[in-house]
Length: 116
Image (cartoon, rainbow, N blue to C red; front, side, top):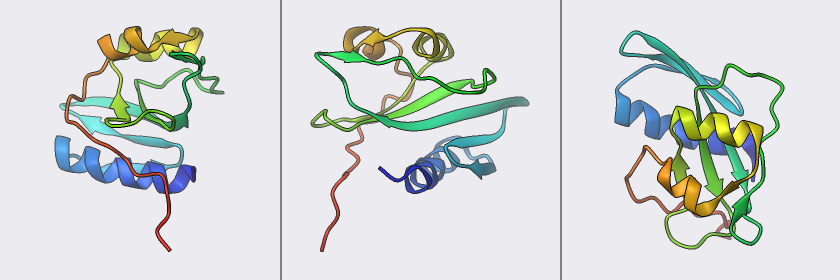
């Protein structure tokens, strides 16, 4: 999955949903919402036996993670709470734990195949 394409697509959704200006620095989106700065990591992952592997980043100032789960059918694009984001930055997280930490509840299926 192309990081720039995913970040721009997700950024458009965040702009529409929150009504804020976004700065794009793939794989990150940054901006301010209700006076608070945010930095969102946009990434594509695959679960392994129902577990999402730890996300390793060179920065610790990420406020949220938006994940595209490539090998999940149906709703496969989720935005995680601050608490679940921090957990995923420090350890593997089960799909059940991940589901409890979703803050963006709209149903979205992001198509990952190309049309020729």
